[in-house]
Each structure stands twice: as structure tokens, then as C-alpha cells.
Amino acid sequence: MSEVASSPVGAAPAPVLEVRGVVKAFGDNVVLRGVDLAIGEHQVVALIGGSGSGKSTLLRCASLLETVDDGQVLLDGEDITDPRIDADRVRRRMGVVFQAYNLFPHLSVLDNVTLAPTVVHGRSKGEAREEALALLARIGLSDKADEFPDRLSGGQQQRVAIVRALAVHPRVLLLDEITSALDPELVGEVLAVVREVATQGMTIVMATHEMGFARQVADTVAFLDGGVLLECGPPAQVLGDPVEARTRQFLARVIDAGRL
Amino acid sequence: MTPGVALGAPSELELSRRAWRQRRARRSTLVALLSTLLFGVVAYLVVTSAPGWPRVRTTFFSPTVAWESMPEIGAGLWLNLQVLLVGGFLVMVVGLLAALTRSLRGPAFAPLRIVATAYVDLFRGIPLIIVLYLVGFGFPALGLQGMPTSPFVLGTAAIVLVYGAYVAEVFRAGIESVHPSQRAAARSLGLNHRQTMRIVVLPQALRTVTPALLNDFVALQKDVGLISVLGAVDAVRSAQILVGQSFNFTPYVVAGLLFVLLAIPSARLADAVTARARRRQQSGSLL
Ligand SMILES: Nc1ncnc2c1ncn2[C@@H]1O[C@H](COP(=O)(O)OP(=O)(O)OP(=O)(O)O)[C@@H](O)[C@H]1O
Ligand SMILES: [Mg+2]
Image (spheres, rainbow over the protein chains, first blue to last red):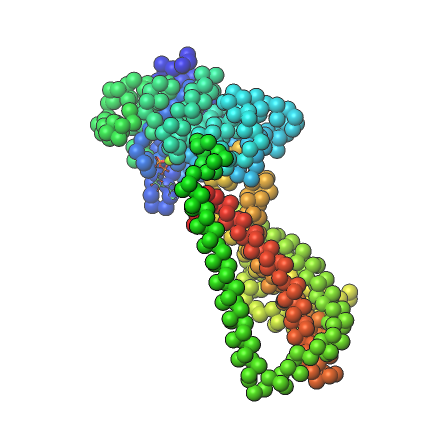
């Protein structure tokens, strides 16, 4: 995929996003127990792990939707978990796509995409509109620009959500199981968009249950288990020949479920 | 109707279904008409056969008294309408401000939040009539410079205080009904709290609460009649004066009917909006 593809994660030079010893608890439930992860420029990291292992929590901590209980998150070397930092400014440099309820239902597709560029980044309406239409054309949805989200299929909605996140030119794109609310036949079209975005050189962290896709597109697969990053490396190694017994167990379950 | 099949020529099956539905609809209408008629006749017979009916008819349903009281009660109703329009607008403003204040996060806003919460708790708990007395008679008694003494202003203020608290809770419920992911999506695009509220949360909340707001508006429509306790010559007070002069209760019936007439359009509008909201939520489903 890229020049840093083969280097182990911790050693990537000047990572775009770096998670250092992040701890997060909800009450007594300690969800993240000191997670370390570094994502280099143009890297695609797939975050895998069972339900409740903390994938979403890690992404929410990284995008400052949750405050961490310990550790740091650095964006381009800047500690964004520092409470003195302006969180709104930091969030402008990241794109996030969630599992569901992504698009704003009361705004048209075009308005969804142009909202942040105009309101947050102060770009002119015309300019934002032009870029949005170009992006929509790339994912084959130009004809839906004036529709409202409820008139779109789930797959189309998620593709628009990706485009909306890209419209602000983020440094890194965080994707949280963006296909798991979709019918199987719609998964492909969404993953195709992610694949294209990855090929263009976008730095991506994605939580996913699509092991096949992770194997093809990711440079690094990180296995999260009980709030600990158990294993992290090239997809062929983590998915094909895992070191940890827990990883093997997890993959065996996934294979049983027919997802590999 | 049926995609994939050549349109324009419905099948025998569909035609028979449509015919059956039409028959059933006609029968339902007929049943409804008959039962309404029957109910009306029975109610009429019961009331008119009551021993006191002749007296009630002359003291409550006298056409001449009704006709003569119309202009004064109508003029009074105009005052109620003004209170309704001015008050309704202010209720929205106060309710929205209180709801937004309660939704503020951060310790710096704690005093504001506490004031807003106290306001809502207090004025949702007190009967409107007591607030009317306290505001209507208490404020002027303070004798402060520039304190308005008109029952119109004081009555409207009391109504706005009470209804503002109700409407604040309606707005708050609407704000909280917007899925948290919507806020997360907005914040992760870099929108700040205010932008998120204004552009993403409030427009969706308003849609959800419109039926509830319209219902509160219908309730407000009759409660504006309570300003009469402060001596404002509104529809209720005019009727009261007329009753006192003529010892005939017909003016009350007239005032009551006028209030009903005022309420019917908004009640129907509330129904229509509620039905539309429900349809939009479950488009396609039969239930
Ligand atoms: N806002 C919250 N409040 C309390 N507990 C939470 C909250 N969010 C997550 N948790 C808990 O944190 C744990 C990890 O949740 P998380 O959503 O990160 O898992 P996940 O790996 O994304 O799982 P899935 O694959 O099902 O999405 C769970 O036990 C969950 O109950
Ligand atoms: Mg999750």
C-alpha cells in the first residue's frame, strides 16, 4: 500500500496519530488498559477484536468524543488530550464515520457534505459545493445531491458519510464499523470507497469485523482483547499466523461465523 | 402500484380487493352516521325530559340574550386573542431559553442551570390561578417605579411564566430525543456546542415536539380566559357582567362556545401534524 507498509507500527517515523498508554474506564468497567498504537502517514490500520473489546472506545478517545483517564493521544506530535487544548480545533483535523445515525436527516446530502467546510472552515458556499459535487461524483452519487438521507439506501448513506468526513481534508480518517449495520450486499460498495480513499494516500484507522477486507487493504492489523492491544503487525502475520492464543481463538470464532 | 408488473392493468385479485375495501369503507361511514344520530337523539330526549329543562332552556339557552350579548363578549374575546398571540410567542421564547440553559454543560454555567431548573420546577408545580393572583396583585402592590399595573400585561406575564415552564420541558424532551450519535457526528466534524445545537440538534428537536407544542397551544387558548380574575374585561369577564345584569346565564354559554370555536382549528391542526409525524416515522408500514 505504501512505503511504511512493512515497518512495524511502533517504529513508524513521525506518526500522524499516536496513542500512548491510554486508559479508559466507565465507572468500574475498565475498558482500555493502557493501549499503545502509532499510525504513520498514509498507513491503514485495521482494529479488530470481539464485541466489547474497546474498539469503539479507543476511536472515541482518539477523536476526543471521550476524555481519557490516563495516557496520551498525539496528533502530528501534539498532545490532544491536554485539557488546555481547543478540542474543536483538533476535531477539525480528523474525520470520523460511525456505524449508524451518521448523516443529519434534516439536511440534504449536499448540505450534509458542505456543512463543516462552510460553517467550521469558513469556505465559501460555492467552493464547498463544487468540491462536494466532485466528491459525490467520485462515489457515483451526484444524482442524489439534493435528496434527503432517508431516501438513500444504508450503503449510499455510509458512502455519503465518508465523503462528508473527507470534505474537511482531515489528517486522519477514523472509521468505526461502518459496514456492520448494512445488508451484506451493500457492504461491498462502502468498502470500495474506503479502498479508493486508502489508495489516494489517506491515513486511516478502522474498527472492523470484515477480516477479508482488513487483509487486503490494511498495512497493519491490531487485535484488541479486553482493553489490551494483544497483537499488532502486518495482516498476513496477525490474521494468518498469530502469536497469541487469544488471537487464534478469536479468528477461529470469526471463521466459524464465515467472515474470513 | 405493483412494481415489476405492467402498470395500468390491475389483476382480478387486486380489483376484488379494492372493491371489498370500498364496500367496507362505505359500511363504516354508514355505521358511524347511524350511531352518532342515535346518540344525539337519546341525549336530546334525556335532557329535554328532565323536570328542570324548561327553566334551564330559558336561563342558559335564550336566543335573544345570546344575540344581544354577542358584541360585548366578542370584544372581550379580542383581548383574549391578543393575550394568546403575545403570550404564545413569549412562551416559546422563554421555554426555549430555559431548555437551552438547562442543556448547557460545564461548571461555569452551573448558576444559570440551577436558575433554569428552579424556574421550571417552581412554575410547573404552582396552579396558574395562584400565579395570576401573586403576579397580578403582588407586583403592583410593590409600588415600584414603572411597574405595569394593567391586568393585560400582568396576566400575560403570569401565563408566560407558567406555560414557559411547561414548554421548556417539551423542548428539553425534544433536544434529548435527538440521537446522541447526531451530536457526536456534529462535534467530530468540528462544530462547537452552539453550532451543533443550532444547526443539527434544534431543527430535529423542533420537528419532534411540534405536535406537543400545538397541544399546549390549545390548552393555552382556554387558559387565557383566566386573566378575567385580575379584572381584565375579556370574554369571560364580559359574560360575567352580562349575567349579573340580566340574571340569565346564556352569556356564559356564548363565551364557552366562542372559546371552543377558537380552539377547533388549532386542535385539528395539532391532530394533522401529529398524524403526519407518525406517518413519516413509519412510512410504508400498515400499523
Ligand atoms: N458510554 C459508555 N458508558 C458506559 N460503558 C460504556 C460506554 N461505551 C462503552 N462502554 C462499555 O465499554 C466496553 C467496550 O465498548 P466498545 O463499544 O468500545 O466495544 P467495541 O469493541 O466497539 O464492541 P463492538 O464490536 O460490539 O462495537 C463495553 O463493555 C461497553 O459496555
Ligand atoms: Mg463498537
